[in-house]
Length: 87
Image (cartoon, rainbow, N blue to C red; front, side, top):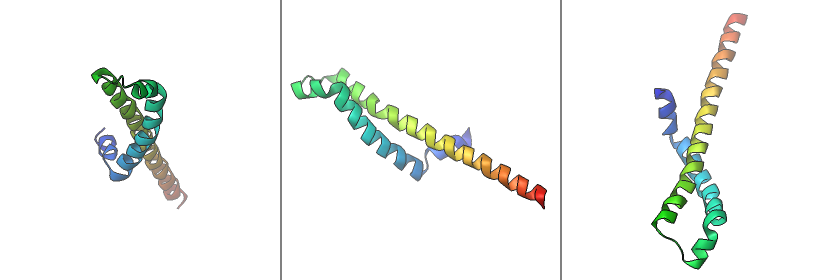
């Protein structure tokens, strides 16, 4: 768990998650709240909903990136172990 959390806060993972959140979050905000924004009907509740709309893609991207990195680490270890057995 400690390694997993450490990977969450690495620069490449955070950068990818931020870009994903910016792009996907913006699109989702426009789809879900665009009408209200254009009408000027933005209150505190809607702002909180928009924040969550951006946070969710950030979390999904982070989990996906870390899971991939952890999986790759496992594949590398398996590959290294099979190379050692072949020697």
